[in-house]
Image 1 (cartoon, rainbow, N blue to C red):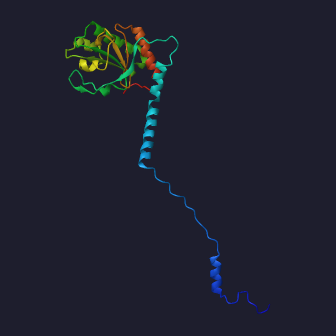
Image 2 (image 1 turned 180 degrees about the vertical axis):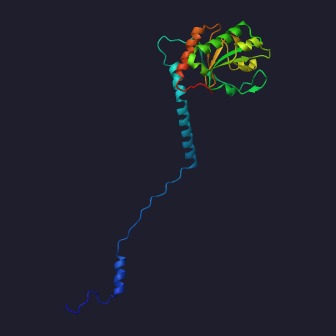
Image 3 (image 1 turned 60 degrees about the vertical axis):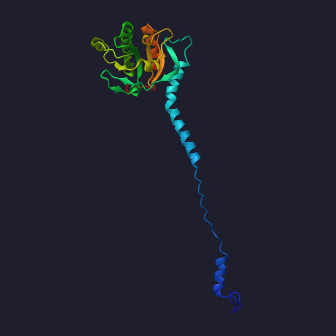
Length: 237
């Protein structure tokens, strides 16, 4: 109709705009909820678990090599040397060099050790073991740099200069008989000085060879140990 208006009678324009705004749809912004923090106990538990996993990863090559040597053995294979079970870790020996200066026992770690025990006067058995010690290291060829020779002198007797020249390259260290005997142990009926002792790079005494040992059979055992540990043990400290 002419003259009619589209607005509702009695409602002004301002009210119409307000009403329109009131019916506009509302929009919402959804924010992610904050994650609750782990409590102190959970954090400590996770830290311990991670530390254990790291230690297991580091120790895995060592465990694998010993498992291969001690457990997975070809049929009929026997060891000449006696395996020490359980192995005995390197104690805090009070070691001294020939000038009387203290030497940390921990400094012996990270190399295979062929250990001879004897008095400073060094009788025939001692001399034979020192000679065998030197020959064995040379017989291992390219692996000889993974081996150190150690002579533990268990008294204060002087050592003859010709003998020191003959064993050049060996570590000659003084220690008390009581301390050494608390770590290394001879066969029943034998003296502490009768044997060659093998210590692994972790510092564990793990093998003892018989008195008057057969060099060829000792060398065979030693070669097996070096081969089994080749993938985790390197020459030098």
